[in-house]
Image: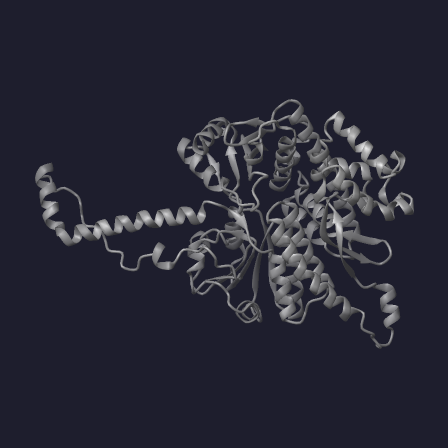
Length: 569
């Protein structure tokens, strides 16, 4: 069931209990977790934090940590699966699910005793009577008694009678209608409101919000935009709401404080300053060179086609018209001449119109604490994504999760800087793969969709054995293909990307990305993958909470793509 009063029916239920906190591996979930952590710590609530990556992790984490725990909070996980069926908990265990994945599982929606959804979004959910029946009766015994097929059929018909036949027909029609309704409800996967925003609003209602929590909330919303999880209109509405909170908290922060020693406290721990501003869709440009940021950012790179010699020439022309010498554009932004830095934003916005980059400017926020610590929200998102994906033999996913969590702490700026450097390498690697794929014509049209396959042994291919990295690659490749394709239908084609997952087990990762022409980023690949796998009996695992990301046996990939082509044609 849905939680009506988040302050009373959610947070009030956590006070005084031992909590099991299960958090998904994504930036929004980590930001929401950080806000909830501060609230729980302020009220001395004991909790156990366990990061999880998929459904198997969820089941294992609950099994290992459920002793004496009667209250479980799930962040960005569990909402789109039947949580009671998956975990088989005791009857007195309560699950509070804060999940931006949509659609919700209907069993979670209509479970009024154990499952509580911390969300107000109830649009499009089927009515209870349309999908559940309370008067289910046992079917009549249809087994033959061995007296002959014809005699058995006649006897059965006499047994059933007219009333039973009508009841069976009614049930069959009801089941057909239910299947149709459920298919329409579950055919698209998409994302709802940021979990970090939900947690910040809880902190606000509890009068415990501050600038740090607000910043974490902003980072969570920005991740949804950069990863293509929400449409621009939804982002604009959220940033407008957050701008009001920025103004409110800034006014409160600037109020005079007459406490003894306040000046000394401010010198040692400078206050956070959040500014609402128009920023540029240039990744990490404040911590990089202008030339590198232009080349490795999706939007300008695809608009100028910077993987081609013609695009490289066009970028140089852009820099010349901006009055930015190549020597300046190739050194770190913070080392450029002061006049060039101050004028860069306005000149970039002006030149954007001429070079068909009207969307280069977007509404965002910047954070400043101290004299040197200035970051925009996108910088932190890219840093956290890179830290989350930086696994290896000595780096377990849980270690990466904790690094991303530490990235939000202003006392651990070195972790954030390390994340920014890793993000630069990730973006450079994505660009090189896209350039290679386009030059070798390895982005292939299957008719109803495009697909690309990264082969084992390719340079830095291990970097794309992680969901977020592969999704970023697929989105970049799709926009780049649309930019150079002569096919007028390319704007309406989705993309499927695959990369090796575990060569020793012969598995690969498959990600589906919706078309660039879609205003609403709803993804139909979850249902399509499931049906294609059933059709060819592919050995596929749907372990991710995002159903458009699956694990597949590499040997079944070719047949799987063929089945997908037939299904979507």
